[in-house]
Every structure is written in C-alpha cells, then in structure tokens.
Length: 280
Length: 292
Image 1 (cartoon, rainbow over the protein chains, first blue to last red):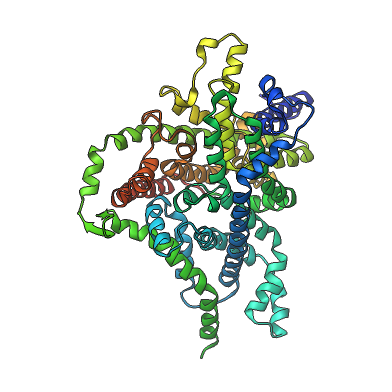
Image 2 (image 1 turned 60 degrees about the vertical axis):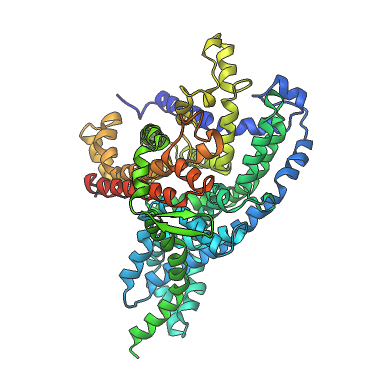
C-alpha cells in the first residue's frame, strides 16, 4: 500500500488530519460560538455561531471570576519568574562550573522526577498548614517555584552545555565572574528554552486544581480553576435554565492569558519540546 | 584554597536556594508521608498516635477502596491505549504530509486546545454529556436513536466509558509533537535505504518508524501508568467518584479521606501504597522495554 507519492493520497491524508484536528478543537469552538448569545438565541441554537453577538455576558462572568483571575495571574507571574530564575541558574551551574559532589547533587535534584506526587499530597497540606500558609497564595507560589528546577535544570543543563565555550572564554578573560557569565551570556542566548520552561510554569499554575482545592477555602483567595468549578456548579443547579452563555464567557475569559502566551511563544514552545527530545 | 574549592563554594552558594527549597517542598512531604502512614491523627489536641500497620489492615476491608481499584485500572489501561497509540497515528499522518508549510501549521494547531484550561476542557465535555441539551443526546435524537439517550456521567453503566471518551478523538495536545520530534530525528539515509529495500508506507512505519520511537513509546507508557494511578481530576471536577462509587478511584478516595474526613494517617497509607505501585511499575517498565 502506498501512502506517499500520489497527489490524491496526499489530499486524502490532509483531509483526514484536518478532520481529526477539527473534531478535537470543536469543543472549544462551542465556547466561542456560545458566549456571545443571548438566552433566547441560545435556546434554539447551541452548537453553531449566531448573530447578533452580545457581550454583556462577559460582565456578569467577570463578576464571578475576576478576583480569581487576578489571583491566578499573581501566582503565575511569581512562580514563573522564580521558577525560571532558579532553573536557569541551576542549569548554568551544572553545565558550566566544576565543583565537588556535582553528580550527587544533580541526581539529588532530578531523582525527584521519579517520585510519584501522590505520596506527598497529604503531608504537603500539613506542611502548608504548619507554615501558616493556608488560604495564602504564597503556598502555591513557593511550591511551584521550588518544583520548577526539578525538570527545569534537566532541560536547561542540556541546552547550556551546547553553548560554544568560546563565548564564555572571552568574557572570562575580561574578568567576568560566574554570575555575570550567567546573566550576560547564558541567559540571552537561551531565550527559546527559557520560554519553553516559562510556558510550562504558567500552564502548570493555570491548570492546577488539586493543590488549590486543598489549601484555599476562602473564596476571595480562589484561583481560576476553583472559581470556574464553583461557578459551573452553582449554575448547573438550575438544570435546563442554566445560563450557559454566561458560563462560557467565564471559560473564554479564563483562556485569554494562555491564548496570549501561545500567540507570542508557541514557536519557542514547539522548538523547545522538539529539541528536548522527551523520551526515556 | 584551591581554585576548584573556590569554584565549588560559589556553585554551592548558587545552588543553595534550590537545594533548601527542594528539601522543604519536595523531599520532606513524601518522607513525612512514609511516617504518617503508620500513625493516626486525632483532631483533639492535634495528636499523632502510632498504630503500626492498622491503616494498611483497614485498607483490606475498605469496600470503597476495593471497588475503586478496577475503576482505576480500566481508566488507566484505556488511557494508556489512547495515550500511546492515537498521538502516534496523528504524528505519522503529519509526518507523511509532503508540504513543510502544512506540517508546520498542523503542529501549531495541535497546541490550540492547550490554550483552554484543563478544567474548562472537562466542563465543556460535561456540557456535551448534558442529559437534556448535550451534544451527544441531541445527535442521538436527531438520528432517531432516542432510546440510546443517557445521563452519561450520572449513569453507573456509562460513567467510566464517558470519562474515557472525553477529548475524543484525542488528536491534539503535545503527544503527537513528542512523537513527531522522534520521527523527524530519523536520519534521511535510513528512510532512503528503507525505500530502496521496498519499505514504504505501512512497511516503513512498522520496520523503521516504530523501532525509532521506542523511547517515546516508553515515555508515554511510564508517564501514562504513573499518571493513571494517581489521577483524580475528573472525579474532582465532574463525578465526585459517583454515581454511588462507580467512578471512584483510589487517588480520589485518598483525597476524600484526608480532606473531607481528616483521616490524614489513613490517607497517607493509601498514598504510600499507590506510590509503591507506581514506583515499581516505573522500574519494571524501564527495565523491560529497551530503547537505544
């Protein structure tokens, strides 16, 4: 059987891919079609786009999830900044410095990739409680910042090792210390890898539900996942009368930061994923 | 002081926040879990009492936990089959596309669903499954199969199937990208010489491509098994383990025991068992599935 070569089989192949992708993406387009409908239009047409578009649903939805949106943004910014800084510094140290017990410390860090998270969940809650961080966004920030280097160092050490040594030699002769080599040379040439890591951090925060559901009980402190779950549960009480356009508006709002992130950085993310050679 | 010693001290200084942070937030919790699994927590006075193996003995008679194991296995194996094969098929389809430009667009489109938070993805499927106005029941009605209509997520006969079916046809996400990166690393000479031997199309997929992506297959198998053992996101957002206990999984049972009933010791014991199983599965699969 020939899959390649013939023009018609290429056409069929592309058609199949487009169909698969379209079906996978369709659930999201339901949101896009739905969030601009008024309740009457919604009753007759749930699955296809409709005019005119109403944006008043957004107001109502924002009242429900606005605070959580800012909370999540705070956690995402702090954990991304902290996590990328620690990971890149660590990756730099392991790829460019010689020191005693290097291997041991490296394995001490990446061994954690092998530890299934479930064992730590209950004690993590107890730890957060004892640190007095229940109902504090800092519990999430610290956990995410210090969780980042486990994979981050693994990813960036490989990348930093591939930077030609000559780049560093010249600066060393000029008397640059290691920290200066790190932020003057290693950082600027590795922005795509850092972007990959940054996307992973933001996505991790934006999708985290289990952790927040344990440590955040005060609705003022909710992050987006908790707020969406709550909003959806409070709405579904009304059965057929559920105001889905408002709910979908909340879903759409919650996606905006990730949309922006991908708009600016998906190229790096694809490169990073491809070059990291994820396999075992 | 020797130069290496001086450099070492500097390296330790740079690494110290990472090491301290990991000790507190990544090493301490699982280690403490190893200990609390043998204790019982009494809320009055915040007391921990050593009870030996009682938590583990209790697991053997915990009917909810026992019922949750087959559910987990079904979801895990279903998820593994989907997670290993479908992304590979999608990656191969894209790999066979001739136009480099289209290939690139497809790779970007694969990532599109990631812009929607995972919780939203689940909630949209919740809506697709809605018994009254959901897409599935509407479609069944449209083609005259009213008697097949179900409350998919609140019917104990369909809930597990419905959870697995979520995301159908599972074509998007980073899975195909990871496979693609493996396929694109196959040297052109290998593909060319395979073609000379008459290995094109299916034959090449079987003889060249699959052996070249065993590393990726292993990655999806191991992460899929570990993830499948521990996951309970769908239970947390959609089913609550119900109806009854028909979608309960051990991970969610642990969660409920800990955070609804404050049985922290017992929950830790469940976590420990899941940890041991996940760890053993990892070791075994690392050993038995060879890659280059």
